[in-house]
Image (cartoon, rainbow, N blue to C red; front, top):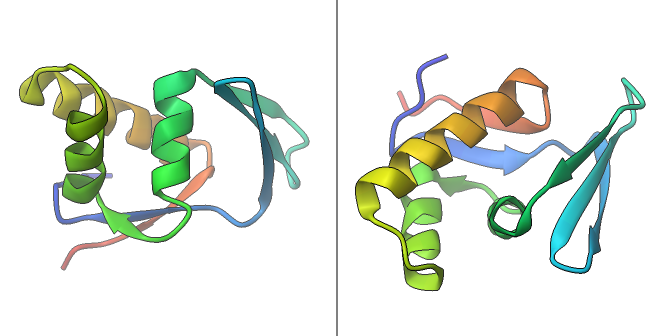
Length: 95
């Protein structure tokens, strides 16, 4: 799956999640597997509770954290591809 800045992403409603301190714990209702997100991953999860483009999420990260734009984009795309591959987020094609 090819993700771009205009691709919209949103959390999959089939997962229950809760914040534990500054991290996020997710439980898949279909696969019954627990997943954990570090503080930045938890921030991203909070951002995509409502559909947002990847560029919107990137801009929110850049406003919140001290990170280079290229590194942010690369890490964000990697995380979102992993989450999409596990079915944790829904991806809306940008075409």
